[in-house]
Length: 391
Image (cartoon, rainbow, N blue to C red):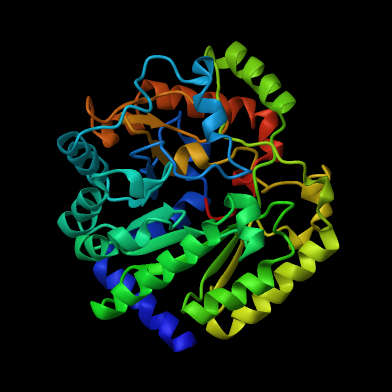
């Protein structure tokens, strides 16, 4: 089993040698050289998240997307933001991302709703030889699987929130049956075509409705042939935190911020049961290699009470979260945004400039310099990014 995972990793690298380059970028980035010794100038990011659409076919309980899109005052000014681009325009955007050779993750919204998703992947993976992955709820995956394989998609990150009735509580009644059918059909298409790609990783976001169901889900995934599971702890922002953050950002950076964060009451979570649930799932996946199970962030070191009941542990030792130096997010109209959460302001547009030109422009240098001198935003204490060591 471990040997198969090693072969899978070799296969990924052979299809996209830049995976190694970006792993090296990440290792160098952890040293913080550009953070500590430059005036806002940064090495190129190791990962770019492209969001071609903000439409979604679900309304999950932990997601604030629909709520935020319904309030015009929360949208960033000076952009068309959620305006989806044509095939020709998204090809230009893809090419301008590829110039700096990052790993490319395609998310949303739900990316399988975007009509030119296979064109993006073909451009990224086959034309430019880069790593491509999609983050999806999986409901439409079977309909696209053949074209995604042909386009060269390397990884599918599929969201799962338990199985059966647990899944349906988070994602809506009847959706687990649809999800299970789509996943099994996708696997059959992949087998029929004799393709090793795309590889599958399941992503499990903790909520009060599913935190106890991780072991049962892990067994179900293994029965399908999916042997990689990532546990993702949610961003924990209250509306009061967001309002305070918006006010401070307005004063210091002269713009209004908007956050993705949905609002969940985590007080019903039993930290001990959560810990044992995670430990059992990790044991189930242990035969498939040390990387078959990941927890982001790994709260087991401090105890789960520390996050879910407000007594946050100290984050990483460095004072500045390196997100603005290591990743960036491209929205449907081509706008380049430095964050999903704490700084929602456009740095430029890929239909006007290349990503290399935008990455170290005046707006980006100003942001990095100000964050370096002022330290974290207060809201960062409740964000997962500073606690994820591999940013």
